[in-house]
Image (cartoon, rainbow, N blue to C red; front, side):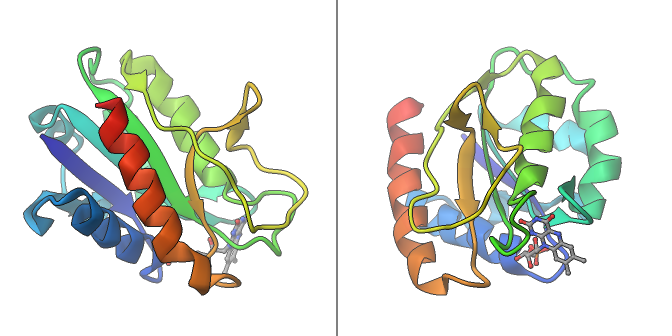
Length: 164
Ligand SMILES: Cc1cc2nc3c(=O)[nH]c(=O)nc-3n(C[C@H](O)[C@H](O)[C@H](O)COP(=O)(O)O)c2cc1C
């Protein structure tokens, strides 16, 4: 079973989370705002899609800051995790870096990380979401390139499906 957990301040990452649910054919009751659920909920799912936007300079969205303290302590060895999130390419030195931080923090859980992707169509200098030469998940810039969002969601959802 797939669960989608997101943190979102102005609704962009929430929107991507629900778009992903639709693309994956999963019911929206499996989509959770991390501000409103306990980390233990992660245990109910085999596959976890974890999403955060980026705030400050390269930080995870605020609601994740609390949630992750509990989440990273869980034993998720049998689970698969894929990460996603929204940013703005004009924050060129920290584009979607919160997604990279989320990925790094969740390593402790022992989960298997799936579905690296690309940033085709976006222009920026640097992102912490590039780790060991790979973009760790789905990065979305819905501020400057809303026209690219749906196609990226659909393509990444296929990659997720193939990896689970
Ligand atoms: C104060 C502020 C700081 C931001 N910092 C970054 C950043 O470092 N990197 C980035 O890619 N986007 C940054 N953004 C852009 C947001 O991540 C972007 O607007 C995103 O769509 C918000 O998603 P949300 O509504 O799901 O929170 C910043 C936006 C604001 C207003």
